[in-house]
Amino acid sequence: MIQKILIANRGEIALRIVRACRELGIKTLAVYSEADVQSLHVQLADEAICIGGPKSADSYLRVDRIISAAEIADVDAIHPGYGFLSENAKFAEQCESCNIKFIGPNSKTIRMMGDKSVAKDTVRKANVPTVPGSDGPVDSETEALKVARKIGYPVIIKAVAGGGGRGMRIAHNDVSFAKEYHVARGEAEKAFGNGAVYIEKYIDKPRHIEFQILADSHGHTLHLGERDCSVQRRHQKLIEEAPSPFLTSDLRKKMGKAAIRAAEAAEYESAGTVEFLVDQKGHFYFIEMNTRIQVEHPVTEEVTGIDLVKQQIHVANGQKLEFDQGDIKWEKHAIECRINAEDPGRNFAPSPGTIGLYYAPGGPGVRIDSHVYSGYSIPPYYDSMIGKLICTGTTRKLALERAYRSLSEYLIRGIKTTIPLHTAIMADPVFIEGKATTAYMEEFLTRTPPDLFT
Ligand code: ADP
Image 1 (tube, rainbow, N blue to C red):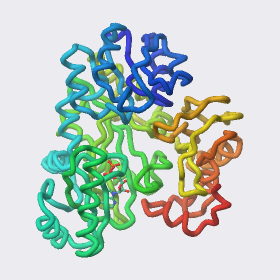
Image 2: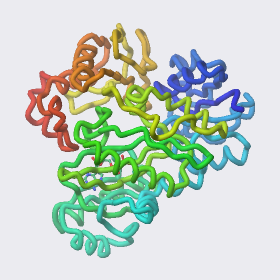
Image 3: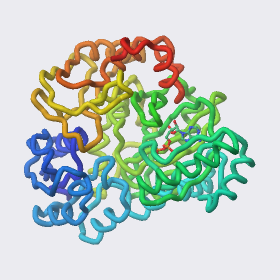
């Protein structure tokens, strides 16, 4: 049984894992960079070891140092959180070979789903619809152009190793294709050290709807319903909610079953997410599987009452899931706003610095997952997300009203944040009516005077 866990991450997710472990009576070891001494997860974990300099490459991505810390502190398992090494098959393999349980699926599954083109192939064989596109990566510009013409413009060029919206370019004709193909390859090479790309039909104004999967090592795979993550800027999620205002219960059933087939095809174990795009007619297409806990997991926790981080630990212990598909109910509505240290008035420029006054909202149906506090200095080296506001109610209307109310109470002085932007969105009729597609943010930012969201 797992008695001590190393948390190979930082920020709010590291704190989230500390909290789950505390409730389970499991000891925690925080590993941290020199820039994160002040961070709450370092202060709240049972033990902490500094593993290097501020840059991720010198600390949170240093497999050797993390494994050494694990051995020194004699942990049973490593929780990788999201980002950093969470989807790194080599890291999972190293943990496996050191007899340390990696909290997530096995390295084979991570490798298979980490290559988006292999992932598409795998799920297609399990009868899960995928976006029409190239059969695997395209090797040359000539071949790529042939595929693009065959599927018909617009097309999207995507990095096989992609993530975080990088290495993804849209082309509307042969001329833009020639340019974007090389830009996508260059970006992919730089971001992932792998320039391989594939081509997909670009779906017009889709919804991004993903299903939360939970699977144990005894062959039980369930889904915990969907999250609608259509509110995105540059392919990065800003707001997520569950259930999706777009799905009918029929479509939910169909997509849930497809998500389970996708996870089973990957021999999945632990918590994971199957992502789909849904077009305006309700046709859905698999785009990728994320083999880790996701930023937006709390909305699912709030509507189902299931603690996903505890479930990951439960499954990692080799235990069976204690519920069946029929036990999972979605009786509430939850919405999450990602609070980023960015200036929406200056093209979302990062706004690191020291927080003066910090006052978080509370009251019924309000949850804050954040590692910051008054006097905390946000290091400039990492992701700009400094917290998540999750509001829950018995109806979507109530969840939205709570979000609006909480955002107006939320005080973070000394830096710029996305709070005013979220407040404006919560009052926007298109969003309130549940009509936001992935094209929503661009359209919102174009039609809204900046002083309303800064
Ligand atoms: P990443 O792994 O970088 O997050 P995804 O494949 O999950 O990339 O896609 C991220 C977002 O990009 C989607 O939510 C959607 O908004 C957009 N996108 C991806 N593929 C397509 C497509 N074929 N058509 C339209 N939009 C797409």
